[in-house]
Image 1: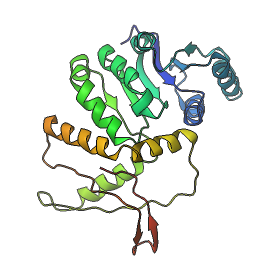
Image 2 (image 1 turned 90 degrees about the vertical axis):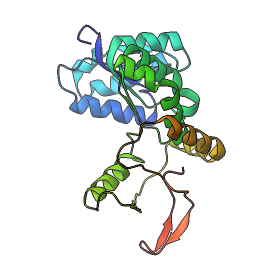
Image 3 (image 1 turned 90 degrees about the horizontal axis):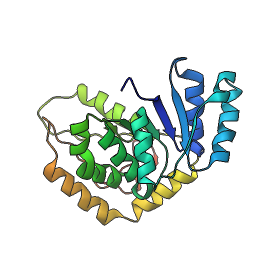
Image 4 (image 1 turned 45 degrees about the vertical axis):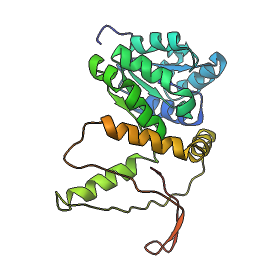
Length: 237
């Protein structure tokens, strides 16, 4: 790992979430962090880099990598060049697998912000063994639609009795719009309910179980007395 060119590559840096991530890295990444921007459009990558240079002039020399999400060979080269890949390119069920496969093969840690259960389960079924063998850590669902809810459920569970069935309902209120990528991912997920359920069952057949199994019940928009309003499920599975 120490011999790799980069510590981190941000893939999809020209999209809505990609730009936000790039800006965060420009403001918070350690000075000695070796990172690069990756995407399929060189001109747009240069424009993002120019914006970052207004935050830190040294970023005017930030490396750029032009690569397409469907180019498996090129993605393998990206994975082999870095310790960590962050990707914001979705919908992941259509565009995400080649990068997961490349990272699993190369022993490269992988992070995304997918909220697509079918994608997460499919990647486990197809690439978990290769990732374990190479030492790659494949970490999905690091976006707003996942992290606050996961942390909230975990924190709540720590304060409840162990060894007994527990049902947790949690609610998050937000005042925000959808990005184009999130909108397309949501439409895709809603249109593939049967496939999503089938893949979930297949994963449960082969996945190693811990002391407590977790299941997200069927989710439907509904009126909720606790909030005196309507709740839209974030996960359906």
